[in-house]
Amino acid sequence: MMRALVCATLGLAGGLAAACGGNGSFPEEAACAPAAPLPTSRATPGVVAQQAYLGRIQNSTANLESLRAALRAKYDDDTFYRRDEFRPDFADYADKTVCTAQAMLDLSPPHQGFAEYDSALDAALADLIDHTRFGREAVRKRNVSEYRQWFKEADRKIQAVRAAADSRP
Image 1 (cartoon, rainbow, N blue to C red):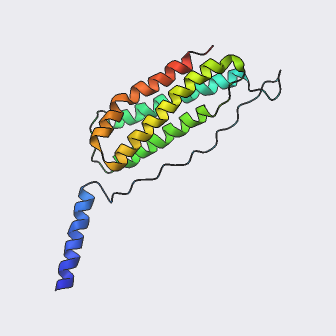
Image 2: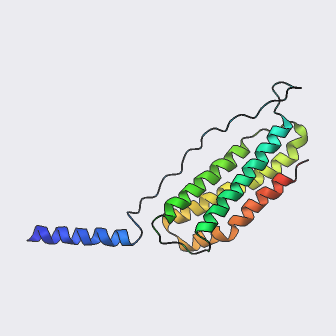
Image 3: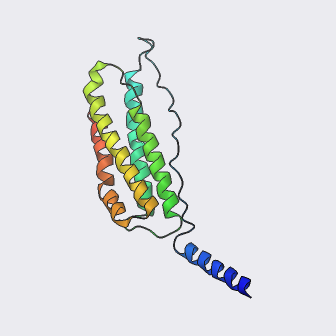
């Protein structure tokens, strides 16, 4: 009799936990795969081709914008969603955003004339990475107020990367 009562209580607790957003597991931050190297210049072997560098920057920036648009399309306001899929979806978004931004940070500019451009872009990317990790941690902890802080600034952080990427010399 006592065993049946304990099992029923545990079953009810498990059901309540599932009703409150799942088992509480949250994926660890994914490791980023190394980015493919940029092609080098035919005229100057061993030196990154300027067009390849700028193309990668523009394509990666577009990817950051696309990732954000896809998340916004699925979760369109600053509500901390209680749906079971929200937390893993957000973790996936954050991982892809961080890895894309990190790959951009790891790019070496083609020549010294890009030093100021690269510095401004790196600052915007580092800010985006920090902010994305802040949001990821807020979602992991289920901290609604911190999530709202992330949400209010998320688009602006990506816009800052776009502005830096578009300011090429």
